[in-house]
Image (cartoon, rainbow over all chains, first blue to last red; front, side):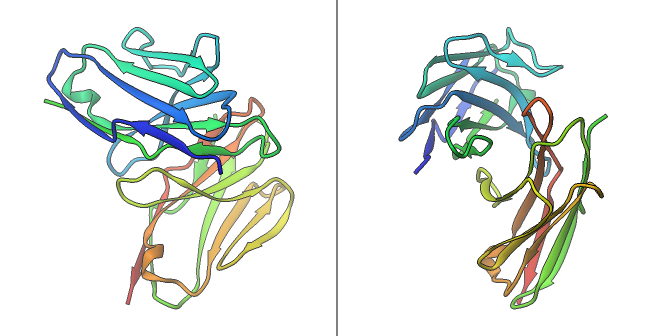
Length: 117
Length: 109
């Protein structure tokens, strides 16, 4: 159980365009979803935390107007990278927390590799 | 500040045992996680320790000492597929995960 999907798995876009990444919890309701970014050979960097129906909480240094997060339902959160630039090229990973018995465990999606040309 | 330390890279031989250490300094403690991450893939959950002691799960075991701010992941009977990065993460008092930089484990035949 506890499967999280992401779409797309990879995307190439031109500089200045926007890209939307979807994160879905397939067999559970996710009270909280997290968005991470990972650059090559580095660890995960938390970008923001989102709870269904409320505004996302962004980590220091993450531009909320550039990385738009919408957690519209208990099974779907989206991350939109607006006006993407080559330095935004990275591996974006979402995770979800159930809030159930395994309260603290985060289930990760497979990740989305974004390349901005 | 909050800090998680783990070795950058380790090398071990197929069939052997390897121990990956993790030390932490965080504001509060609500448990320590170990995740495995293969190159280009998302992390997968290995273990969660919140009480002191050893948790064994098949070939993998995880140990925690809260007083020492220390944990280790023990991998036995190493297989080539165990080549991956192993991430240590601590949940702080705000229930946020603080991530270590990961330990890249290289398994040689």
